[in-house]
Image: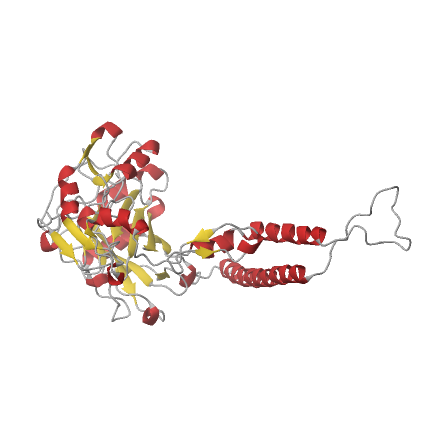
Length: 437
């Protein structure tokens, strides 16, 4: 799991490790699958904490999906195997190239905001040797490739593997015949994005091709007047169109594209009109179109705190929101533990929806939490959670709201929230963003 947060003004505490599931360790925030696990230190720094357990001396995997990197050896920037691993003075590991590019534009660690410069990162030869000891088969082993190497070496080997699948290895743009040179990989959606974003360029290419075809097929000796004579000694200009099969194909392609675009524009107009009506009548916007983001305004915060303290069974839930119209459905919950009456707990829950039957389970993604400071954005508290498939909170919910939540038992000190300006006008604002990975 990973989490991160920005200093809310509290004194920075040194990182400390505590026992966690199956030997994992964590820092600062104690994030849990439910409300029952205790913790000792509330959040106070922007940190993504990774569990780390030494690998066995040598491991060979039959799993051909070598892209699935072990969390222990995963770079938090590229989310892939550590390539030329380095370790920072604050104890975090990155690919050498990743952290070097990061430090070109930043002067702090991307995980805990500790001041960091290029002279404070050092080669991590121990981790590099451990990764080298992990062995994976080439994904093309079913086709006859006998290479067994470390994940990094397999990455380097794959582009030149003699057994790699060459059929459909690349997808050309449908407009390649009119000089669009884009080529995409079939395992990505690059071609789809290209068709959406480069439509004006395609229209321009079609127009140029049409003009060139018309000019090349125009016979300047063909009389255009009754006498066929030149005007002032100059041949008349070519006609605006000169019909042939190529012209008709181009026009048909342009027409089909325009029809599709017009249909999309109409759909967007309908959605915009519905949203405008909802805003005008102050109705709640359909949670299906929240795009995985909710800004939760907890009004009458002091009264809410008193109610939560009065009874441990009192729970406050946010409204629901979806990652997309056909995606996962979530809500958030705050409560106060009886043993920690001065600490606010925050968890995220999956909810049942009409989309569950076609979604991939367990949910795999990134959850960002932000307690917003209304007057000073630098004081806002940020946290990031990376999901893990073994955590039941991210499995398909069996109740309306999953009984398993995931988040922080000790999210924030209530005294800090009240006295450091987070709840001006007695309103606390928490922003939650959920992205599918």
